[in-house]
Amino acid sequence: MTLLLGLFASGLAAGALGALLGLGGGIFLVPMLTLVFGLPVRVAVGTSLVCVIATSAGVAALASEEGGADVPLALRLEIATAAGAVLGGVVSAFIPARILSFVFAAVVFGTAGYTLYKAAGPGEAMYRRDYTPKRWGLGYSVASLAGMVSGLLGVGGGFIKVPTMYAIMGVPLGVATATSNFMVGITAAASVFVYLGRGDVRPVITVVTAGAVFIGAAAGTLLQGRLKVSWLRWGLVLLMFGIGAQMLLKGF
Amino acid sequence: MADGHGRDPAGMDAMMRRVSRLLSGFALALMALGLALAIAHGNAASGPLSLGLTLRSHRLMLFGVGTLAVLPGVRVLVAMSYYTAARRLAEALVALVVVLELIASMITGG
Image 1 (cartoon, one colour):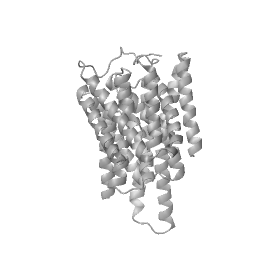
Image 2 (cartoon, chains in turn purple, green):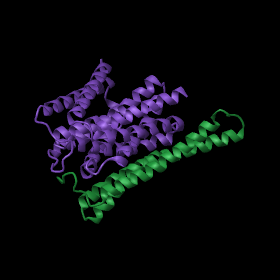
Image 3 (spheres, rainbow over the protein chains, first blue to last red):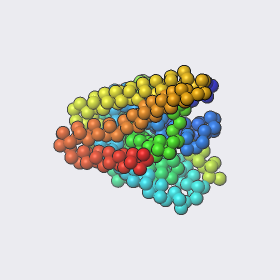
Image 4 (cartoon, each protein chain N blue to C red):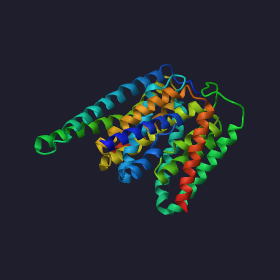
């Protein structure tokens, strides 16, 4: 029962953070499930993938019309992400793990730095309707790189997608997080059946965690409209620096 | 394409929200029912009757997980149907590619 309560609490936190920051929450859940709860990595990843879909579903079910995803943008970038993921999966067999960690850290630090640079500008609205996504070439490139990082390192890549849309393509941060939530659901759905087929999704563990993630994501979505864009931006930058440092340490 | 946010075909956002609520509600109900069965019978783990109940509860939970897992694909299908109806064929084609990619992953994984 203690294990189930622990999983429930972790799921609530991961769902809320995932919804607020445009991530699936897998970046928090996989280390938590393996390091704290002692689950095998493949089971942790299988559980996490279901939870990423639960976050995406929780956001989609409760997002206001104003705070919805930019679906055409999400679908176009998702094609590049998927292609990158396939390429990353193939290339991963030939690249040493240490190099992968350094690549990961470099990508994350670079994106965090660019987001901070953009933050130096004037204040902005969380949601706007009058924007036009720009720098598609660069956006596609980084989206496919995000997919490649996903394929190489087994993470969702939402922490790259949000800054890419926000800082590079000029999409308002609120729309970028909602669009990323839409995208990570699709990415996770593309891999989860492999884990289901292999028996790596343990029903009780997954149901307790995913149920909590759904509730957390719904709460995060309701909270999002009340948060200032600067809080969310700082949350994202801090998260990226934390993940980058963790990967850098792993590389040494 | 450069469509700004908010220019989706009329009613698409609302339909996707409705589909998300319906499917995720159904999936969560199945998972909760399976979990309740598993907890109720989890401690009486001996004998064929308990084994049968455990299997049934696990099947219910996995069916709920499967329902949740198809939700992103269903949302893309909804988007594709709206784009097709609005004659926005480029976006409909992009959505079709994503749907095909998901179907391929289901076949490979299943």
